[in-house]
Length: 140
Image (cartoon, rainbow, N blue to C red; front, side, top):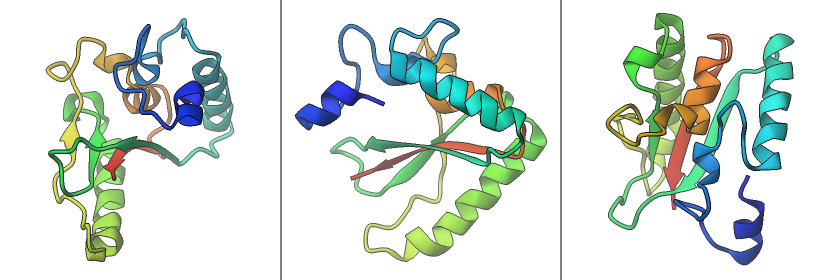
C-alpha cells in the first residue's frame, strides 16, 4: 500500500503526513487505500472474500513473528472463532519454522492508538462478513 516507501526500500510506519495503515477512514487520503477499500467491498458483497493479511515489519525488539488482531470487543463470535482457527493452522506450519510464530495474537484496540478503528485490519473486520479472517502479520 505504501507505494512510495516500497520504491525507496523504507517502511511507512508513522510516516508524514499520514500513516497508510491508519488511513482506512470514510475519506482516505491515499488513492491506494480508497482503491483497496472499493475492491474489498466488492469481494465482500460477492461473498468471495476470506482473508485480509496486512504484512508489516516487526520492531527490532520482537524476535518472533506474530499476528495483530482486532480486540475481542470488536469481533463477533464467529469472526473470533475463524481468527483462532486460522492462527492455530498457522502455528502448525509457521511455528515449525526456525523463526517460529507467537502463540499469542496481540490486539490493536483503543489502548493501542487513537486511530485504532482506521487501522486496515480493524476497519476491514468491522465492514466485512464473518467468513473473513483479518490480521496483520509482523515478521522480519
